[in-house]
Length: 265
Image (cartoon, rainbow, N blue to C red; front, top):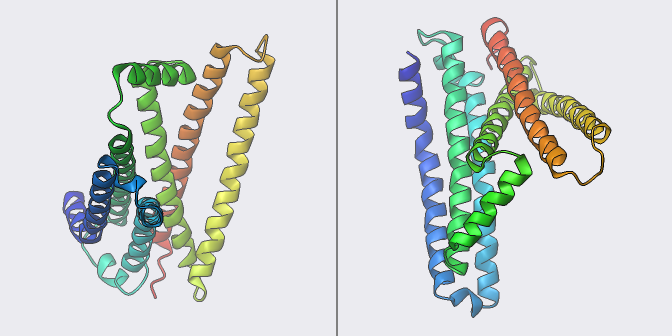
């Protein structure tokens, strides 16, 4: 049943998502062609306007994706369409899992689209990097994290997936708490989101501070590359782990409210 729910979610959400990806692809292709031909260097004011539109479109993609998925979650779970959703012969857990997995996939794809767009524009303007530049980049990244280049990429990828997972579930949990109120549901959801964010930041800051104190106590000098890379590696790993734990807590909140405290409009 989860497979059928996922198929339905992707079919419904792909209409808008693929349209946004197509728009970004077209803007990127036009910009890359202009940059490759050197036209942006001679267009002055119009080049500035185009680059502003391009940058806004790239950054807006990720934000619009998050906003669209949050609105869809609220409408299909707690608003008018929620009656249809919760009369389906599926468990609340399966419904929630379909929403979460769909959001995670689209958020990750939107981020990858932004990265590919930036790389395309950069390479069109400066040309493909040579082997020396690529080797230097790999060495610097490996030095920062104190591990191989492949392991560093895996660590960063895991951190980003954890970020998307916990952010989407934080929004879903905030909306779930907001629907408990008879009135002012959206303000209540915003208040819950702010409270979640503040709690997270306090814990993240405490983790960073504790890691920094441990680093200073175990360093002979302030310039030991091994200790610094170990600190970066540790903080990155702990940040990803904390986001996964927060995501799990938010998931539990969503599931409990959906099962026990559902209050449709």
